[in-house]
Length: 113
Image 1 (cartoon, rainbow, N blue to C red):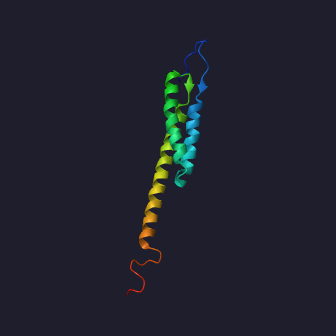
Image 2: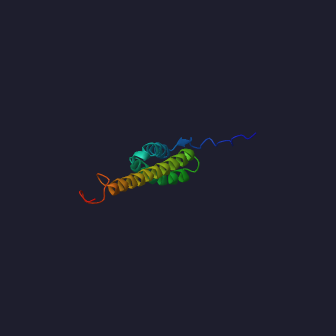
Image 3: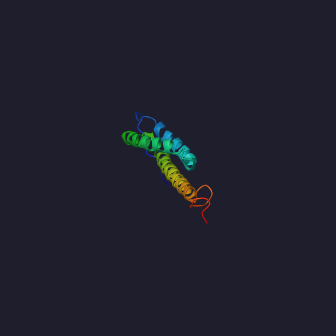
């Protein structure tokens, strides 16, 4: 059975990182809207903010918590980016196939047999 080490009375209280929470929220938004390509912006912002949040967590020396939220937010942001890129690739392929098929499905001039 493990117990928490005793805290010194002058140690500050633990605080949750608001940046880590923001990364998690933006990661969720990016993952949910990723297939609609709208997830690119929140996912990129989440990844940029994650770098700052990680620096803050390290500087907090254990009194700033939120590493789990940060990891989850980063994973969801990457998922949102992958889904958005996959949606773009599918849209381009479908567009090229429709363009190749032409308006009436013929690739020769009308009236030519």
